[in-house]
Image (cartoon, rainbow, N blue to C red):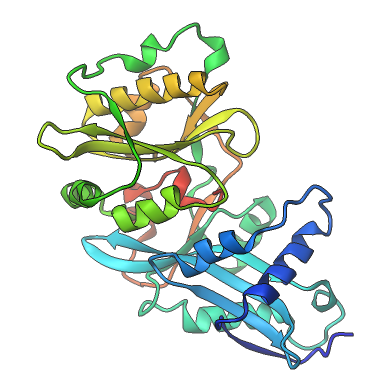
Length: 340
């Protein structure tokens, strides 16, 4: 029987097993096919993240964890400044605490603690997430969610509709070709530094982030590739993963290159289409904001824009951040989501 009295606090070392027990029990309730989240994935996601940890817990007097409000922090370049932001991902409450309470519920207590401690400009410039339809409506109406892309546009090519992908390679630069990347190094840092002025609002895609997010991810295998720039560095880099969300879809989870480098975009598209066919994928998908020149370059090469099931929203903590400016300048990709 639940004690109904909980203490709300930030994550402490030793909470991992209790968090996983709560998380896995909640998500398995209505899904007999649910695959339990592993300790390795949790530690990668929350403890090894180079941007830190933002996890708030509701804990009973005996130590049982009954609620969690967690965000995934990221380092973002915002108007030339390095700031932290939090992506809302794992909010769960034990079933005993969901109904019948006259006092403030466990979810609201943990959420309120998070916003009081992390939802301030000194910690996070903004929060963001990809809420489902129900959460999106509630968030916009009651929680000051600001839609950035509702819905997010997917750029897609159904390979089974085409005998070849010559269209995707129009304008390709034959002086270079895709090279596999086992692990990102200083060349990724140099590429990011050179492109940061072109991306006024974007997650900082340096080697620390790229290795953590893609190379070290324990729950999904990503492959990384790059185009050499002729001087020993990278001209562009991208990552892909097969069977995204289950079907035979190759997701271009990230792309980093000069938005005006049309030849590099063509090289990337030619490569990912060939990679998809070689690995039994029937479709290629990527996210690029419509305000980014890469979007038009992809559309011009036989990809079509479709509405995805995702909505990208922002919750602003820094009062100087203008929503219209954010919509015009935010560079996001599939890898920015929590569909690992």
